[in-house]
Length: 309
Image (cartoon, rainbow, N blue to C red; front, side, top):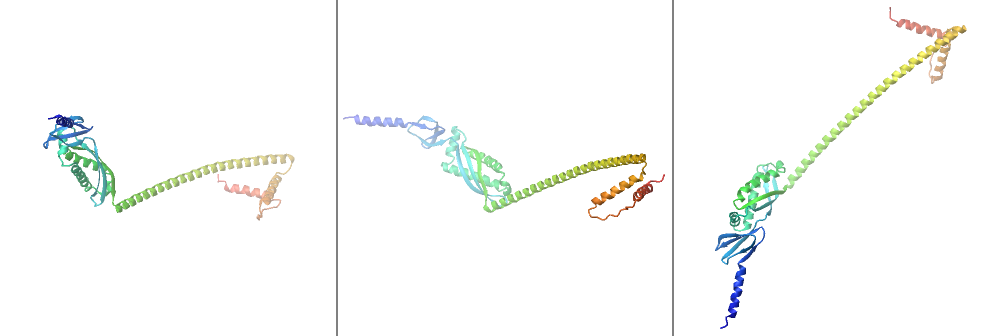
């Protein structure tokens, strides 16, 4: 009897069984090995030897995983808030006991994801229910801290750890969004009115200061001008007096009566008034003795105003 075919078959089977005893596990992944349904050991990354009676029940990734969630919550004042969150989680450790909890706490990974989602949902709803709608937008950090604290106590028992929770979006019903937009718009209008009022006040204050400075400068200039006019007038009168004194002395030396000088000055005054009257009627004494009468009147007025000695 020729045993060659049987030997070949047995050899092939032996080679196949030998090859089946080796398994490779990817990086950042572990394999959970059971024997007749009971946990036996953990296969690590790389090449591993597996006995024929052993079974790799599940391959578990040790990498971070992300879960996207969307749900709604109701605030203390009955406002509906829509949340969009992203949860980053992973197996809490690479030791055998932690991996056993992560694999055998739930029947399937989908059930674990559902439990994690409902736990986060309930924690955020609990926090939002104690907060008013007007405060909720500015409390993202508080919501995350509250939720993560509750999750850390729960998921650690399941062999997982929540590394981060991010609230990516938070919206209200359209009616509330419209009312919030109106509130913001009214506040902006109020701020704009306040700024415009402050600007107008500053402008008017500066205008008043400029006007006061202008009037002060004008008054100073007028004061200086008046002083200069007074000095000029005093100098003019002094020069006139000196000129009349010199003229009177000259007339006296020439043997001419000094009253003739008064007559000349009076006639010059009449001529000046006639040239510059601009059509007005002015009555003046034009007699020959008018200069003497005017001088006597001026001297008499001066005598009346002198205080008694």
